[in-house]
Length: 456
Image 1 (cartoon, rainbow, N blue to C red):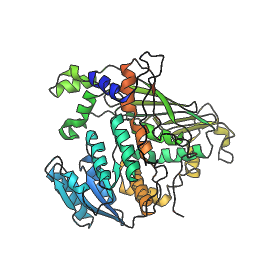
Image 2: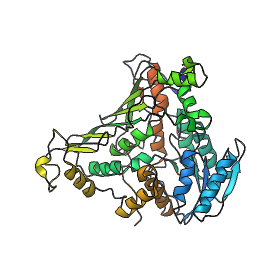
Image 3: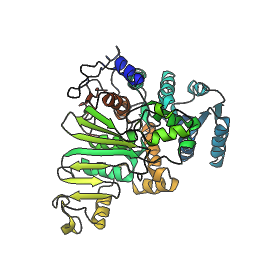
Image 4: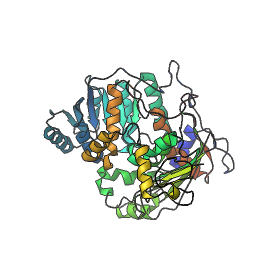
């Protein structure tokens, strides 16, 4: 608790501590000479020359995915464990790719990768606490960065990443794969086409029991992070897709958040089984965060990696004329007049989901503009969380090679990661509302509506 309050004192200007007043946040002035990077375009890259840092579960799989792109050259690989580098080298050889330069054996060996002059994209898949420091070092050395989730764990890291990206005029993207889930992609297009009317509320979560996975994290770093932090420490899978639907910093912005948590039962037990003092364990088993937006809409986000609930990202879009949900089953509900010309119209009503036949017809009619049938088939064949990892990587490669703005920018990163520390502050003050800063520093309404960039 002392750690949380110390961070709050350093990073926040607290105007009130009672639950009926908003805790104000400080927006640091933009350094002289900097401008926002909304819609940032860089010269097209004929070849994306990549360096991978972190070759555990996610990094090793990413090497496989990027081996499928002919205009990608994997230049260097880095991991503290030499055997992981060699395992990834063997994977390159299986794809008839040349061996990459290897960096391993020391905690800072990855810096040599960032310092190379033949890399234009650094892909970071390490433990969370190293994401931001590595990204900052890479950008300092002129590299665009793609960072696994969450890309930042503190407000200081968030502002440092924003300032570095703005100063260097480089892409700083968080690798949020869930925005590329086929259902989320289609639902986003439905919302943009007005099928749901005005979207007023969305929900998202990361409910995923990690029993059987904890030991897979190097030196048990993920459990350690849960033990030393409060708040929603892994919010982006649930928050990312709904922020796109709600046009966050593209016509609306998150304004305040309030968070609460349950007591820790499973977390303390796991910590005790790890030979540690269970009373040290900070995070509650379940965390809930409610967000209000500038336009008067709301978002609910949950985090639960402790209880045996079935996997659920709780994705829901609630509009004045329609509704979509992915879990526990995919479904749509629409007013009868919202889907003119759809088959079996008498089954459209506002009291139960549409039939499976109508749902399938809607999914096809509102296919995302980025998800061609060919891309969907390839993604499912190559794999990666059902194909959404491949679609994410495909879009990153596509945008870089065509000199286009990326699908997610550094302000998305900031907004989707800020729940961790701001939520901890709210919890520390009895669920008091906390102001969400405008990470764009005045440009949140500069773009009207979320959209994808395409080559002409």
